[in-house]
Amino acid sequence: SEERSLNFIEEIVEEDIRTGKHGGRVLTRFPPEPNGYLHIGHAKSICLNFGLAKKYNGTTNLRFDDTNPVTEDTEYVESIKEDVNWLGFEWAEELYTSDYFDQLYQFAITLINKGLAYVDDSSSEEIAKGKGTPTQPGTPNIFRSRSIEENLTLFEEMKSGKYADGEKVLRAKIDLASPNMHMRDPIIYRIKHAHHHRTGNKWCIYPMYDFAHGQSDAIEKITHSVCTLEFIPHRELYNWLIDMLEIFPSKQYEFARLNMSYTVMSKRKLMQLVNNAFVAGWDDPRMPTISGLRRRGFTPASIRNFCDRIGIAKRENVIDFSLLEFFIREDLNKTSWRRMAVLDPIKMVITNFLENEIEWLEGENNPEAEGGEGSRKVPFTKELWIEREDFMEEPPKKFFRLGPGLMCRLKFAYIVRCDDFVKDEHGNVTEIHCTYFPDSKSGSDTSGLKAKGTMHWVSVPHAKTAEVRLYDRLFKAEAPDAEEGDFKDYINPESLVVVENAYIEPDLSHAAQQLADFPDRRYQFIRKGYFCLDKDSTAEKLVFNRTVTLKDGWSK
Ligand code: ATP
Ligand code: MG
Ligand code: MG
Image (tube, rainbow, N blue to C red; front, side, top):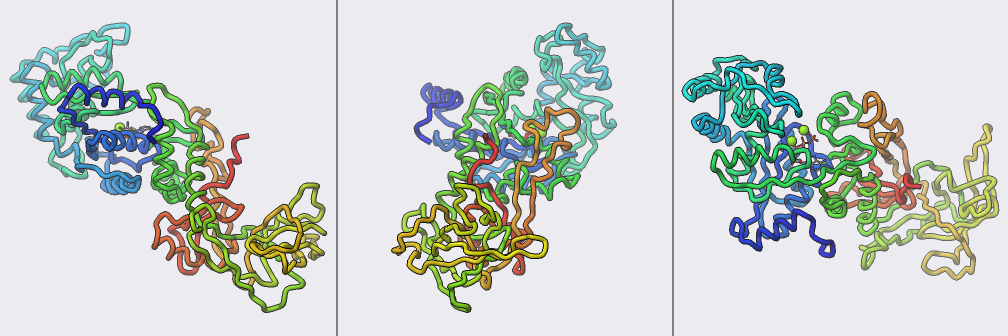
């Protein structure tokens, strides 16, 4: 929004525009590795990168950082594109680091020719040992003094497949005594005989992250390369490589990643949840993935507003999951259509209402919207389903729903008074008998009666059944990552509660068509929360997901 003050990256961009750096041009990039589905943390990075470009008349590249052939897949590429689009952003170019493999190989040769890279035959243990410790400088090995000629030959042989995985690496020749461990001759190329999802078997050497990322930024002439704080120690190497290769001077800036309570965010951990069937897939509505949040019923606007609110800082913090829920409630309260569904039914009989009579009442779709967004007809009959918890045999004071002698309003309809109830042989209440007051109709009430509560209900002969899935936090621990043992031990066993046969008002049987007409169609099941139609729905059985309850039940 316009009111908030500039974040530190916007300040940098504005300063760069003021001083005419890069001719005032702004080009950012979002660089996911296609090794999993995007999560809410990525949304923060997406909103930042695309948001910066949008604000300063720039553009953003979507770059797939696909330098690791083993873990990457086109399924992930497709899902990432869908998610970025769904969040409401458009990239200028769709690019792949793997498209730069030839160029990156040439950059490596440039470094060798400048005496700034060498082929090392040591094992990874030997290399680690040779780097020393933060308090002890490293020691050069015999390979470090190889001639340029020899390095060129060996690197060419590495490329042509002469050596096995791990037999040799290419290292930058920088400073084995640098206080920054990343500068102690980092590995820039490794051998990996593996099939790549785009380049196939063309390559058996692959650039390391540090030798691909900054160079890709420079190739694309990215002006502001924004990444998370853990890359601060990589910045010196980022700049060194750009300087030595004399390529476009992209600049790296770091911000604090998003951490959230009651969930995990690394793709590696989310993958474990999927592979071990703790969840139904990457888009399980309990997952913190964009696809999971989408299926849960979150809107793009709610996620963008959330990202805008949490802002961009230079210090790590943990955001409470409730904040995300606050933004979806705020959005859905304004946009959702009000409907009635009874999740735990008990029958109400209106003794003074005619058998077989149907009164069609008018129910406004959305009281928060101008004009109410139209209305639908709601049938009122002698027998209604109501929520079991709305009746108490011995209600306490201030119970504003039904009990013997108590009155309550039925939403869109009349005030009723409970006169009697029926129990089965186990003592369970099976039916509630009420009188309705014909002159108390909503909108034209002349009865003079007072009812403090309002209840939802569904006409018995018109009720359709649906499956309703009630979701809660995926983990019962605030920081499952930080707990003892495996994070999966802290999964909330009540994170999914399925109501097999809920009763829904007849208009909800058109939910599939309503969603097809308007992809952001969401419902407030009155008093029960916000719901959306799930993709598991069939013509025979509709399935609704609860996105969020009406009120926050977690913060005390
Ligand atoms: P993960 O550990 O979840 O796999 P990653 O950083 O390896 O995350 P990438 O695909 O490399 O995943 O991320 C693409 C971009 O998204 C990077 O620029 C990264 O900094 C950013 N990003 C990833 N996680 C977060 C987060 N939690 N908060 C903010 N930005 C993030
Ligand atoms: Mg990464
Ligand atoms: Mg990762």
